[in-house]
Each structure stands twice: as structure tokens, then as C-alpha cells.
Length: 379
Ligand SMILES: [Mg+2]
Image (cartoon, rainbow, N blue to C red; front, side, top):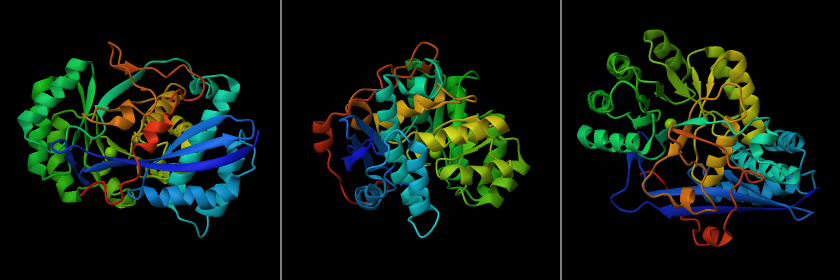
């Protein structure tokens, strides 16, 4: 079965006025994704999602031109060879770095959708997993920089919906961040896991100021206090306190996770399957996490495809952590692209979809109705 056609479809929507969550990377004004459609010579169709890289048109162009030319005609089931070819011709030398990893991720996910459809199995079965419950937390573009009382109210609403864990956005001033975390801890009580994400916006002094309060509030993890390449800051922060650190949504391929693991500062690995190299690379990273006893907590991208695939992966790995449920009030990419992945049970868990492939049947009319909107998604 050969790869006969590849088409990238960048999609966008504007966040409705009044629902613009602010976090450490700015105020969300629109959301983007790049869908990747792969068709085989036997007529099987697979869909993947590449992260937009804050310039979805560029990622789509890279897929439609260079990547397509590299892999058209290759064996559609041989994901390792496709991965190797793109790595050699785009990632390892004179290529587009992170953009190539995003593009490859979308292509790889589409090929895994095809593999699972060809096998007549849900993706988790092909990955060696079962219909296992996966713990979910209320995350995504939500619980942003707002007054502590309003934040506590929003947090309580997610607990009422069944979530046993939720993620707050920090990376504001240390005083405001501490006030928010303390208000939410007071509101939800000791049994809800509070995770905190600075979106790379802290200095080491900010970290020193928030760490005692975060420890006292027994947060589950502090995510991306610093940019991912500031390895020294992660080491310094880990040496200063017992606040557990999380990172990985801006780490590309197993090679960057190798450095993370060797440094030993981060305990919660968060590869985004639509960024770090797809399912193929995600499972390699999961194996590394297993060997080094890091919990595997894939970061969630924008659409139901990435969400479904993340749950399949979590149901299939040795050290599963949390599924990040995007609880944004308005996300048509989650709700209407062709099915939803993350129905919550009474234990606050989700389960993988059962249809062959990743289980999201993409509605192309919906895709066509959400064309690319140029410009930044955070301002
Ligand atoms: Mg994050």
C-alpha cells in the first residue's frame, strides 16, 4: 500500500470576544491547526494533525511541497522508513528544524490512522494497549490570569464536572500567581491535584519567590517555568526546591528528550504528539520515560485528532500520566471536526475511541468552513 496523495489543510477560528484567556504566552485571540490528509493507492484515507507553530500557512506549505515530494510513493504502513527519510532530508541537516518536526508529526499521525484502519483496529490496539482508563485534568486554554475569586469559581465548576485534577496558568507576577494558587487550593480542598503552568515566563528569581507557596499548596507539578533550552535554569530550580517540574511540549524528537532525561531536573515529560514527531516518536519517548521512571503526559494540541491520538497513546504506554482535556469554553476543533475523544467518567478518566484508526472521522465540510486566518494566535 503506497502513499498516493498528501494534502495539508490549515484551519483557524477566532476566539469569541470575552473568552480570550490570558496566559504566560499572551492573550489567545484565535486558534489554529494544520490537518494532514493522506490517501493511499488502495483508497484508504488517514488524517493527522500538525501543530501550527504559530504560522500554520508555513507548516502547510512545507507539508504540501517538500515533505510530499520526499515520501510520495513510499510504503504507507512503513512509518519508520517515512520518519527516517524526513529526518534525514529535513531535520538532521539544512532543514527547517522545529517546523519540520511539526510537519512530520502531522504526516506520521495520518499514517498511523491508515495503519490502524488497514488492521481494522482502534489505534490503541495496534500500539499494544487496552481500553484502559486514563486520568484526565482540566487544562487547555482555560483557568488563565484572572482574579483569584473568579479563578476559584471556574476551578470548582470543573470539579463539579468530575475532574480530579486541573491546571492553572501562572507566569504572571509571583504575588498574583501565589494568590491564585492559594485561592484555588482553599476552594477545591486537599484532594484535587493542582497543576501549574508558567508557559516559559519565569526568571529564576520569580521561581524562587513562588516556590515556597507552591510547595505549601502541594502542587502536582510546575510546568515550563523557563524556555526549554535554558537547561541551566531547570537544573538550578530543581536543586532549589522540591516543586516537581514538568516540560516537553516544546521539546522536539527523542533527542531533545534525551537531554531532558540526562539532566534529571524534569520528572513529568510532556511530548506533544503533533509537535515532537508523531506517534512513532512519541512511543519511542514513552519507552525512554519508562526506563527512567518519568511520567508520560502528552501535551494537547488543538483538535479532536490530537486529543484522540493522545488518549490512544496513554492507554498503551508503561508510565501513563495525565490526559490534558482542553476545557476551553469554545473550541469547535474539539467538538465538531468529526467526533469527540474525551468523555469523562465518574472517576475523572477518559478512554480511547473504539473505531478503527484514531476514531475521528473528519468532516471535510467543517474543514473547508474554517480556512486559515493569517496572523498571531496570541497577542
Ligand atoms: Mg504548557
